[in-house]
Length: 109
Length: 243
Image (tube, rainbow over the protein chains, first blue to last red):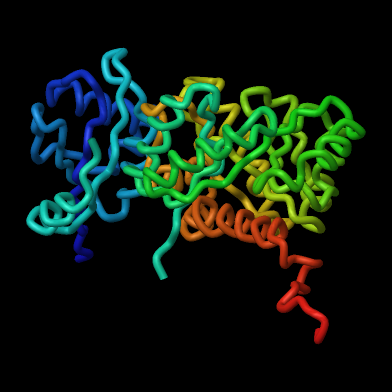
C-alpha cells in the first residue's frame, strides 16, 4: 500500500484585524474550492492543527502531493470577511516539531 | 548557491517616500533580494533616495522605466533618450504595432501586456519569435490574479496560459512580478511561483521566473551601463599609453 506523506504548513496571518479559527479555515476552504473546484478541494485533505489568534499564526496539514495546491490557494486569499489580509507560508515540514523549529527562524510581522 | 529572489515591478509612488519605504521593507521581510521601482521621469535625486531606502532595508535596487508609447516612433525616441539612464526598461504594449517594435528592439528588457484587457494581449507566435531573437522577456504581473474574481479571472488565466505556452515554445524568458503598490497584496517569492502554476508555469520554470530571469536582466544591464563596457563580450581591462 502506498504511504500518503503528510505536510504541515506554518502560516502567518498578515492583517490589522483578528479572525477566529472558523473564519480562517472558511477562507482557506473557500480559496481552494474557488481555484480548484470541489473535486480539487476533496483531494487536499486539509485540516487545522493549531491556531493562535493573538500571534496571528496557524498550522495546517495537507498531503505532500497537494502542497503546491494549498500554497497557491493561500497566496490567492486577499480578504477574510471583507477585511484585507495576506497569508504567508513561513515553513513547511513533515513533522510538527521540525515545523516549529523552522518557523521560528523567519517571522513576518 | 542560494537563490536571489527579485520583484522587478513594485509599483510604489516615488513621490511618496513613506509608501516606497513601506513597500521596500515589506519586500525585504518577504525574502526578496532585488527590487525594481518604476519611475515616471528621470529624477536623479529621487532615484538616489529610493536607492538609499533599499540599502537601509538590505535589498538591492534597480531603477526601472515603464514606457507607454502610442506609436512605434514614440517608443524609439523614448528608448534613445532613456535607455542609458535606467537599469530596466519595460514597455507597456497597448497596441500591436508598439508590441512588435518593442519585441524587435534589443534595448527593451520587458514586454508587459495589459492583462485585464484580454483583447489587447498581443503576445502571439510572431511576437514571441521577434522577442526570442532579441533580449526581451515576457513580464507577467500577479496583481490582477489577486484582485479579479469569477469569469474575469478565468479569462485572465486562459489568456496567461496561452501567452506562457507561446513564450516557452519560442524560449522567451518569463519574469513574474507583483505589480502591486499595496503591502497587503505582496506575496513571498515561492507564493508568486505557486500562483504561476495556475497558468501552467510550474516547477523550476516558475522559480526561475522570480529569481534567475529577472536577476540576469539587471546583471546584463549593469554591465552595459558600466564604463568598462564596449560591446557584448568586449570590455576595457586597462587604460593607458602602453595598451
